[in-house]
Image 1 (tube, rainbow, N blue to C red):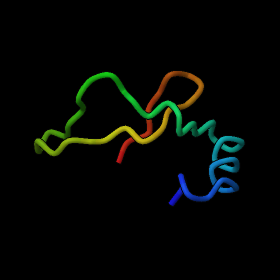
Image 2: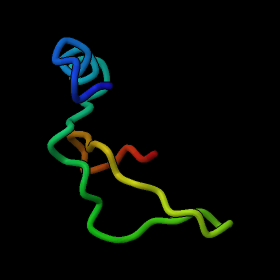
Image 3: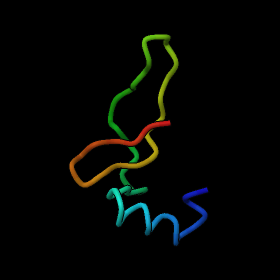
Image 4: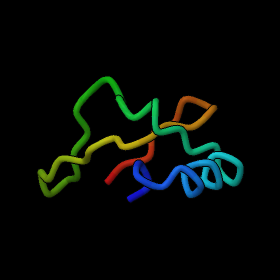
Length: 51
């Protein structure tokens, strides 16, 4: 949904530096249950937003 709505993507960038071009975390991340998380965006500090 965010990738399809440019206005929403720009709002998220202004509010929390949500950058869709930086979704690659670089290594696999998983919960203790074993379920994998997918990086969907990054922020200016180098952090990653996951789903």
